Length: 301
Image (tube, rainbow, N blue to C red; front, top):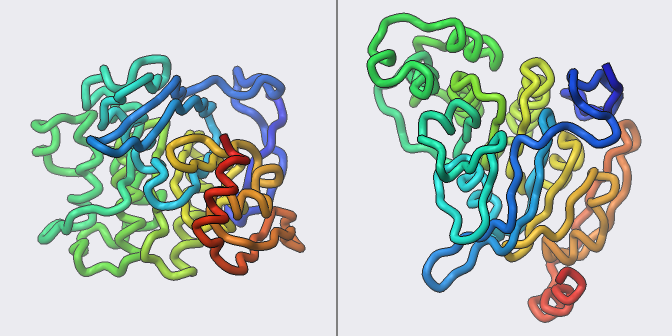
């Protein structure tokens, strides 16, 4: 097997064995590929001509301001929305043309927010992730299958299986939702702001769990993050969106710069390096005024 870069659960970079069939020079084969992707609502264009490829086994962080198209991209790539232009290929097939259950067997999407689930236990909620494989009749069977049991164990919630979901803390509930996504047993995992509303301890807990599961299950992971420092530490590739276009794409050490802070996130700041792990660390100072942002836009397009 070839050697390739990886990030461990504590955020440290190192070398690991590349999966069989991966060319360490050319990179892994594409599992998600956007070609001229566009999407919008009446009077508002969200994505404009996105060309983006995500290889098998990658952990990619999508960053950008609110409304730049990050969540929309995940929904398009999961086949939940139909593009107004271009297409997204999911393992070579047009995601918008795949039947819903077929798409769900290829990609699991953990949404940014979820409706309340009164009266459901942890076990019952996680079993909902098996719908794509077991179907509506299979969901009526008693007992957990091996995939559900593994999902509960992988995120450390087996001991909570019979507790009501609405009795859990925010961090605990997010781990259960992650288990439900894993129960789909899909090779691709999309996470839309998985650390939202969590305190720092639970943010790190969730991100370290994602990194560990990506390695153990050989998953391809794409996650939307607002914290650039978390993206720089835990992802091995960052894709920055601005106004529906790709503004930057590459390893954190190349992408995370003072220019990125200004042109993509709209803040003046400094970038250093972590003294232990070496990943980029951002020190935002103050927001840029709107006129400065307009001037910066000329550097992007």
